[in-house]
Length: 228
Image (tube, rainbow, N blue to C red):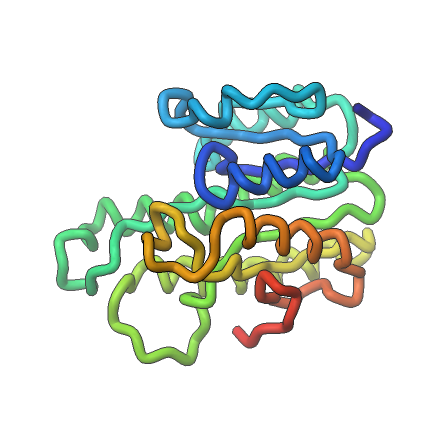
């Protein structure tokens, strides 16, 4: 496995994360997938591949992340911060925006990226790439009042991405964020325009084509540049 390019994907148990795992295996990556709850990860756990290693990990639990990072014995070429949640699509007046639920979204979506990158930074290979899965819903210019805290969390993800890209510039490590498209997942809903396979295959292709010139930038799933 160590001769292959290694990719670590958080939130690998469902939706885009699960499809990124499948796509990465099909492209002959050495794949490390993390998931928070094994009872909600049955499809992931059923995948049989010599190129796949799975770890139970909570992206907001530092001990959990540290334990996994200490158990990885070969360098990471790609670190994909995909784990994320949405508390709902209501406004900040609605029940899905209680203090507790909003904190959970910020913890998982924003701090989860920071903690993941902090603890896995020691595992990164030379010229590694760090990718944060963001969303078009995080751009500053929009007309939506719904999904208030989710939008804020993804705007924060892009801001964090810029800060982290500056942190890693001296090491020539590329740090970028991607909008995965409107995808038919639990979060995206059944009317979305893309299947998980369409999104994941395009994402992986564009992850591979990233260069250091792309650090600090936000991209669409198809590789086109996006404004914050």
